[in-house]
Image 1 (cartoon, rainbow, N blue to C red):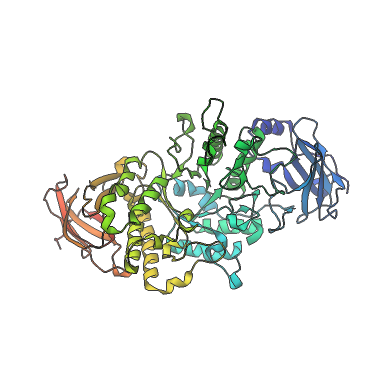
Image 2: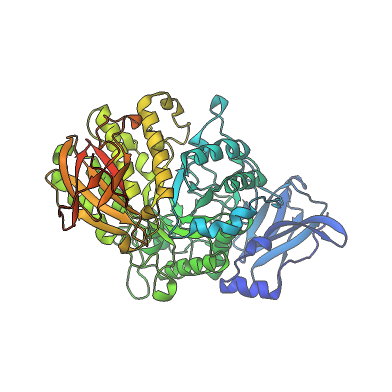
Length: 638
């Protein structure tokens, strides 16, 4: 088995690669099964410009450096070659001998499949699959558009549900169980914590080594495709968490790849990430940009992914992120902005929306950086959506307060509207809020057990009424008591208890109402879709507002009582006369509430209030949120 000097790369491929514009490198670099001179085998190609020699070692040559790759003579830095009789399923690595004498065995950065950790070899694989999601792919622009209802169920696949002996579910097992559950709950999308191959399970996938490979912990690449296919056939979108902000320092990975800092910055003040003990990509290198953008497009192309949530964008934008004075290097103008990362982010979003305009990119960006979700041609970063971290922090801060003191923090629950339309926001109650000793969402709520559940139901209904798309981390939908752990299943046994059943039932109804009522999603990013009725009743900790669609005919009035005191004869202004049907009440007994309410609805009286021509005299349940939908037909006042 001699190495044949063979190439899949054209001169134009090399030109694009060196310009940072080759977005399909996964078709050229890595390992690919081919026929050369009538003989079947595997082609290998790896970027290692500072290597003295590169050998392929693997299960087919007893892991001995007997197969040396050829270095291209075009200054591309790429080593390649074809080895006959090497087939699918063979294990391999690159043994790189650097010019400085450094010798290391590296996994393939472009591999489609890896050994199950802690093993680290790459696996020669093909990723062909017979997709059956044509209907979804043809119409997914409807499901992913900014005026669509988007309610995301965020999950970590390995700890969502476990099988016998605490075993992970496989991709195929999850295809059945997860799809059925998400459909039953009414979520529109799932979002998977990073599924890309990662050596340390406790990183939850955020320390990625395989940027083109789903983790083998749960099965083969085609098994993961089957999971996505199954979800799509049931009308459920799939978003992946993707991490271009940093990578781990495991020796078999990208770090010090060819005896130099090839993928990472050379200067330690830019290279090292103090928060995660990891390295930062050098976004100024065109080859690195080609690598990362190719990875992003790979998942949209080969795996039919509907969106990418980009992790830790703030850490990419700022050179002084989590650094003290003297620990960071300013840009060429003396500023703290990472100009190279900004350029990369813009090019990433431009490429994704150019080739996959029916998908979305989502920024996890926690600062006040302007125009994150505005087009690059207007000076924005070009993302489609952004997590609203301000809303999340303020809302949880407010609801964690004893209701007795909430009136002193009333602005925490009203302030978010002032900036709600500055970006295209997702409201996230994510995994970050239920780890590292923060407790579950339920345990953040104050009061006795009844009040904790009532507060949580109130939180969810307020969230679904607030402008912005929705995201909820697994377990929160049935009020998990314990904070999340990646090493065990969610506590599904809690659903045998009425209070937890009630929260889950509420989430089902919220998703149903949210999807069916255009007023709650059509104008999420247009201020015409929201009107305050009253945000000044800080003394009683009550807010009320209106959501409406483009026609203003589908109008929903929302009232939130953030205290445990029921309020009778509470008057609120109404924009229309006629009957207002109570379509949701979080204090309903079927959700575990006390049953206070308005007997299904009531008619507005022609008595001006709150600057409106009409008014409603309501009963406000304790620690509850109620939705009223306007019906034009007049009904007798109840």
